[in-house]
Every structure is written in structure tokens, then in C-alpha cells.
Image (spheres, rainbow, N blue to C red):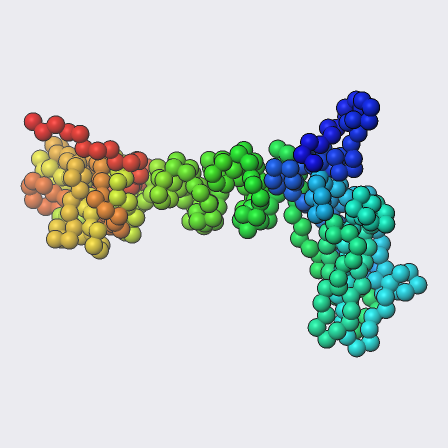
Amino acid sequence: MAERASWAVQQVSGVGVQSAEDVRHSMAALWTPAGAVTSRSGMVPTGTAAVPGSVLATLPTANTTVHVQPFRYVRQSSRGGGTYTMILDSIKDIDVLNPANGGTAADPSNARIDLIIAQQSDTFFGDANSNMVVKRVTGTPAGTPLDPTVTGSADYVLLARITVPANATTIQTANIANVALPSAVTVGGLLPVADATERAALANPFDGQQIYRRDLDWIEVYDGTAWRAPAFVKTASNASITNPYAGQYAQNTTDGQLYRYTGTAWVPARGIIAYGKRTSSSTAGNPTNVLRIDNVSLLSGRAYRVFTCAINLFGTANDTDSLNVWISTTGVAIAGDPNSSQLSGARAEGKLINGGGAAVQAKVDTTYIPGANQTASFLLTGERNTGSGTVQVYGDNTASPILLMIEDIGVAPPNTAVIL
């Protein structure tokens, strides 16, 4: 039938009476949908120490009995519409091996596999009763034992498999293989899923549906097209973020870097990407090499600020000294080397006007825009530009250390200069 009698309406001449199936349809509307009029089967999650519906051996001393933990399980009917809410409200003990208590003694030669199931019968579909029973299904001993066939209602859930070894007299924890069941929550609730595989198995997700990724410890939202992680996530691998969007940020716990998604790739977010520090003075020379930073990853289309702190240079009177930054993208930067070049704007001069041994302060602050992805080496030098003799760059551990920094300052804008 197409129309179903609605929940809680006034009956008129028998019209409006709900059948058992009508009631199941009404209850199914409260659970996470799996289709237009179907719902997701699963275990209602709890915060209890024992997993709902799990089957446990007797501890600390094993015996013939196993113990099924309380649970609420939502079962989409396989024989009709709507859902059953199957409930075990206290621990149920099931004897596996003792015939006096309903168990089956172990075979002397071969192992067998028993199943622990929760089965919902329904006279609406011709079953003998409408009971929900948590029970054991006894397997057949064999050299390679298989799961036994479950008879009766097809509306059941497998909770655990128990391997009964030949001649077993107790059931140990190692003999029990609990089934990792999916979760079920009410509509709009946060649905826990194990991983991307279980997420992909969600039938007909709706726009705005939320899930909790147990493997990644974050929330994802379905936007009508794809599952998206939140605007900021922490992850050991950027590749684990499926369907990222432009402008999304990720803190990579493997390398400690903050990344931003450009729409096509993950790139380091703005901030200092390379840093060099010296806490002692350079040797006197012309030039004098101060410090170098190698293996700096630079990306095409990004703008980088290359700068120093204010640094003291020592020389002789009336001479002009400078700080310089050299760059090489083919190896180690070397001042004056043909494979190295001085950064445009990376020269800061100061003229010594006092007596010999006096100091002048200078600092470098310039911008570099690579034309392609590069791995660069940066070299900071002090040089004598006029006069003779040497120059020394002064550094002090506490008062004035020498610092060279490379900062990603964002996407490089287009060149809109008007040449005059």
C-alpha cells in the first residue's frame, strides 16, 4: 500500500488503525535514513566500558559461559517496512558447553563455530511468535568449521562468533570474535563511523548529515556533493582529508607545519618557513660569511619576505659596509659564485663616520617571488663596499643575536606596475 496510517490519530469507523508495520514505519522516521522510507541498521552507541552487545568470557577464571552485554539495536526489517528496536536491558549469560544448562559439549576431534545472535520474530510475517531472543546457534564440528545456518526470522544481527576447540572445557576470551557493528543514531545525530570505507557505505546521505570519523577523531559534513572535513583539522597526513576545499587549513602533526589548500594542492600557510640564528660574531673578512639556510622549499606563485633583524657591522672610519643576502636554487649559495645571485633589494648599507672599530647598524628586508617550485639556499654576508680592510658582523647571545628569516606572506599578486 502507498499511504500508511499515521501515528496517533483519531480513528473513525476503524479507519486510521495502525498495523504493526505502520508502527514500525513511524518509528523508523526517527532514525538515520538509508533511503526514502528505510533507516540505517546499527547499534545505538553508549559511553559504557563494555561495547554494547559485545560477548565476553567469564573473568578472571574462564568457564563454559559467555556474557552478552546490554544493548539497543535498530534493525531495518528485511521482510517489510520500518524498524525494530531490539533491546537487551541487562547482561545475559549463555552456556556454550554444558548440556545441563543448554550448552553443547565440545567435539573430541574437531572444532566448531557457534554464533551469538539477536533475532526478532514477528507473527505479522507468519512466525510462531513475536519474541526478540538473544541466543546461541550451534555449529557443526569439522576440520575447517563454518558458520552454522540461522533458521527462523531473517531479521537478526550477528553479535559474535565463538570458536569451540576440540575437547574444550572452557570458553576463553581468545575464542570469541565480536562483530564490529555499525552505529545508529536519530535523525540529525552525530553518527560514528569506523573509517572512510564505512562512510562510503552510507546509503543516500542527506545534505547536512554529520558523521564522526573514529579513525581520524574529527567530524565530517555531507554538503550534498561530498563529505567535507571542518575548516581546520589536525592530521598526520594531508592526504587523509578527502574532498578538501580552497582555503581549508590543516595542522600536520608529522612535520608540525600549518598547511592551506589552494584548490589544487596543500601548501604551507603564511608564516616563517625558514629561520637561521647566530649568537657569535663573524670572522673579519671581505666578504665575511655570517650564516646560511639550505633546503628551503619555495612554491611558484607565492611571495616570500627575506629579512634580518637590525645587525651591527664593524669596520674602519669613513667606509661603507653592507649586509647582503645571496640565493642559489642549484646548490649551496656562495657570495660572488655564478650559480648564486644577490637578492634584489637585499642589500643594506651603512657608513662608518667615527673612528676605527666603530659600528654601524643595518638590516635587510626584501621580497622574493619564485618563477617555479624551487629548493633554495640563502646566504647572509657582510661586505666592504668602499674603502679598504675588512668588515665584521657582530652577534651576541643575549643582547643582539644575528637572525635571518624567510616568511611566506601569501599568494603573489600580478604585476600591475605602469612603466614610465
